[in-house]
Length: 226
Image (cartoon, rainbow, N blue to C red; front, top):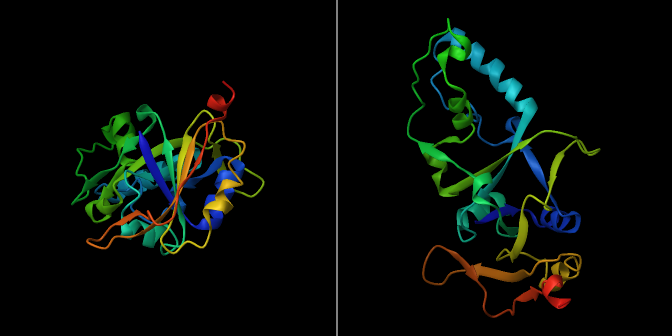
């Protein structure tokens, strides 16, 4: 499935050059309800959930994608006010978890005399993909990533190779990075990658391809060698 990752221009270029993407930690995400989309009004259950959340936060992170690159709100919030870049990846469907948007916190049957309050293991995986409906504009898909080796920078990364395939590089409407700037960083990519400039639409609230600027298509090195 084709999914999209909005980011600032400098981070996008770093991702392209190093062929990797940063894993987001639960405590770094901009929603304090991450892994807490559940009624925790009971003090005992709240303490247990906090402990469990802290444990999960040490073991797993997420990479957040969107189903579309054309949402102007996403460009504003995650694409450095339309100055950033959106990266389009092909990822196998089995690795993608669709975010579930709800109006209210989940109200489960909890029994604190039982392990994990009597909640089944799959419920806790669901919690990793629950968000308030106000976030639904993100149209989000997630990849759950175990936290293995921490990079010397202090961050966690996952490599493109074997996990995701870069297919598109979309320059934001206000992006000052040129197509030529991106082109020079794609020489090592085996697959074809399309780079193009975007603009705001003339007839509706949408970001669209800027046809006035020719796209660049990095040819598959596999095809070039045949």
